[in-house]
Image 1: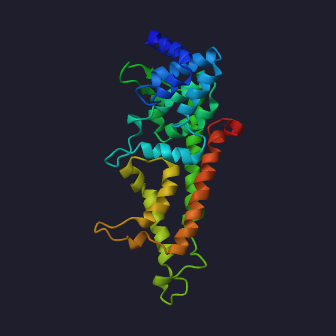
Image 2 (image 1 turned 60 degrees about the vertical axis):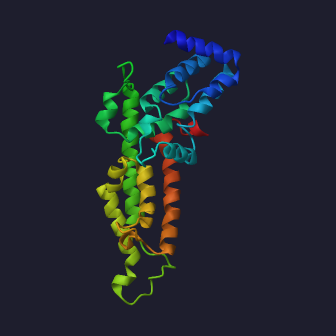
Image 3 (image 1 turned 60 degrees about the horizontal axis):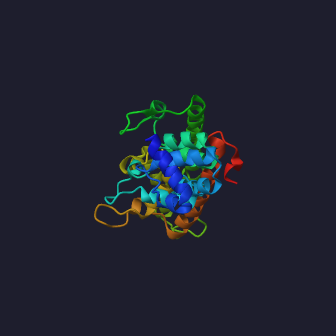
Amino acid sequence: MECKCQTAFYASLHAENRYSSALKYDVNDFGVVSAIFQLSTKYEVKHLRADILRGLALSWPRHLAQWEAREARSIGPTGVYEPRKVITHPILVINLARAANAAELLPAAFYDLSRSSPSTCAAGYTCPLTTKTHQLSDTDLLNLLRGKEHSSRFLSTFIVNELEGREPSMSCVHRMELDVARRRVCQSAFEAITFEILRDINGTICQRSSDPLFAIMAAELMQTREDPLGRPNSVLRACEFCRSEFGAAVDAAREDLWQRLPAWFGMDPLVWA
């Protein structure tokens, strides 16, 4: 394997950026990508390092919109979220970023891993091909657990501030209803969404549990969910004005969460500057 990686490194030197552009940066190519990246860092081959870093950033980006594109690629043809089939395990990426001084990859990798249980994170990742187990350093494991706690608290705060007891929009179509039940249609919808999130039904079904970014987005998407007969689910549907205001709150919260990731996981906030 070492000889193969060195050969790939020399080939990439002679082929300029053509070789690195041919790499897929997926589970199958990661061993070669990792080796070339570390060698280009060690021997200060700056153009090759930059090419590899751009490729890795497709899966470990610094912008939320790029993360959303990455997550969309992780959904299989049957609609099941299966990131490990196409994206390298984050423990490998964290260790590579540490070894090659590529801190900009770390926040997204830490967040990805934080969506797993603490016991799974501590146990490490065993490569099915080599049977070698890769683990985080003690420092990075502590950083991971602290960041996981921060993101969990952020979701709890979002639920309290934006969902529990949410007041209807000033333009709510039900605001002037005489019937109390009709006047509370939108409030009841947000209460039902709160209950859904606390039950974590959405995360469990979609295999996205412990994912605050997804849970916050799901709070908005639930309002367009259909019932088993294909009709709009009125229990979860607020009026257009209330949905619009809530949608703005969702977008702002998700961007705020994303920008906090470096600090939460023990990095300089300027790593994404």
